[in-house]
Length: 50
Image: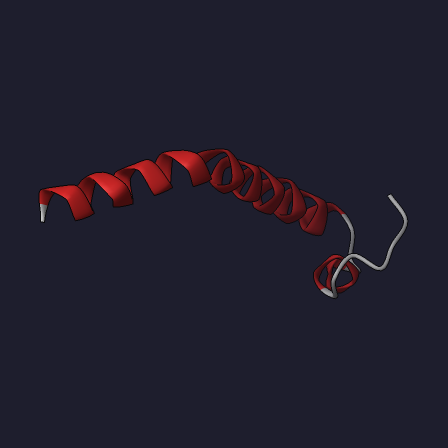
């Protein structure tokens, strides 16, 4: 069981960068949503141009 736990921990460390990016995007999208009334556009897959 220790090896499985270690592998899981390594996977979490590898995904931490992606996880942090998702958290940052979620936070920024929430702040954008509070500023603009049409926050539904940012949730449809990002069809808007950056």
